[in-house]
Length: 193
Image (tube, rainbow, N blue to C red; front, side, top):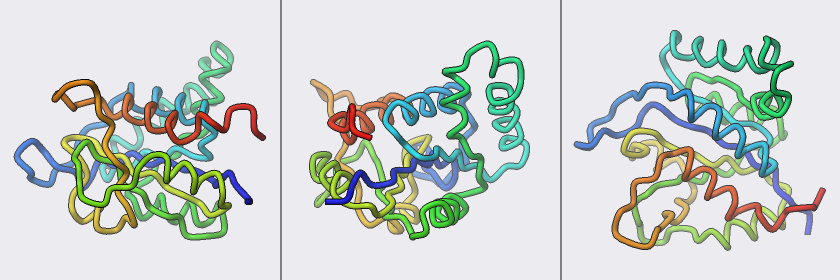
């Protein structure tokens, strides 16, 4: 038993789906940057990648992050500084994978997330067990819009089971889904180094 595994998160904005199933690029949502960073810091994620192909929107995220890392925000709210220090802005999933490989020395296991059920999806307890018992890196892939494209899903070795509520409504924000997923995967790691 060597765990816990190095865990990374990427939020993909392209290629993702719109409501009609077409491949699109979604906009950056400021709350996704902040809230997923806070969840990532809380649950021991090594790095949170925001992947976007448009240079102007990557620059916007860089400005937001810089405010909390080195600007007035870093002095005003040190806990936000700690969370935002995990954020790395990248062009795409490939750049995130390369950064994980450089950081960890190994190619990460890619695990997709989705609100849709698929046969053979990976249960949270099974992935939590893997994360506790290996030192191999894992990259959780979250999508925006109406989910990850088939191209992205096909690159992942598994798709995590969807998060289910109490009824038939199943449309969480990605920041809420990320928080729940990280809690289910890492809550039992509380207090462990």
